[in-house]
Length: 134
Image (cartoon, rainbow, N blue to C red; front, side, top):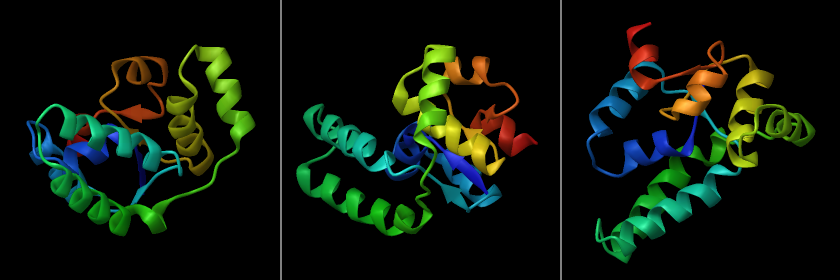
């Protein structure tokens, strides 16, 4: 089991330069968990995808349905005061803090490509490459 942030989800569902790597991650560990926040962030990713010509609205709706089907049962509630504490202690966004707090609460790795999180939480956060290689 691993926590994945929204960018990892986007890499899996939206074809791009990190899609193959995210597929390898999924093959290594397919039990992905996420905080409920992922839906809001991913919806924004899809909106940006359409606005910048990556795909059309129909494509985005299809990706949305696929991602919900895949992750809806993988959502986990978390202790929001813990996320708030992480936010203030490490000067990270409340959004990022929710992924870190979930990983800490479940004692599983957070898979992210966010350099700041990888630096601030070396015992919790791993890049896709590092997790796959491990």
